Image (cartoon, rainbow, N blue to C red; front, top):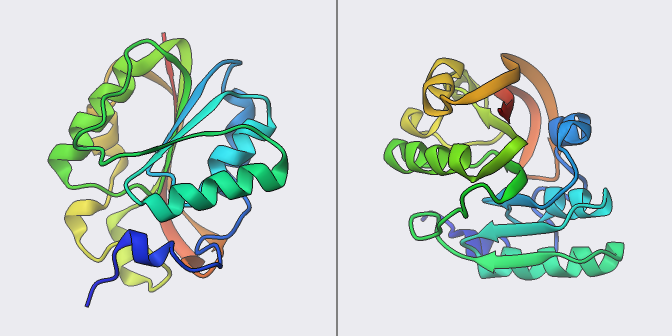
Length: 198
């Protein structure tokens, strides 16, 4: 039986660990000063990291247990964090509001993904930056995390279409070692994007 995200994040252990995604940590300096929106944020590790860098961060996830742990991690690290429990089917990204929007391993059905990415483009301020890392279809050859449905995986070509209107500063498909708690560990096939609103 499939475990719900609320159940997965309900345990005391942080399923993906407490440290930020390596790509987010590497690229965080490209996000200008200002508010940052973190979507599908699980237990909040990236959101808390960005708050530690001085951003006013809003973290959104459908799992109340995950957002509760994000709040605890923020308190542990001595930073403020706004958490929102919401399904992205019903969450509206405020237009032209965000200096940065971050999504790591947020895998949605294609129609929802296209809708979210359209809102991302509209939601960034001029000069704002979108950071994404996700699994590609090549990840199906590995057992190191991610969905098993190819429709939920992403390609660089599709992302270029879905994020039309942004300037791509970094865009590649690659393989890398991922070490993020028990959820993502080992060799993985990913797509990485850093894109800026003109």
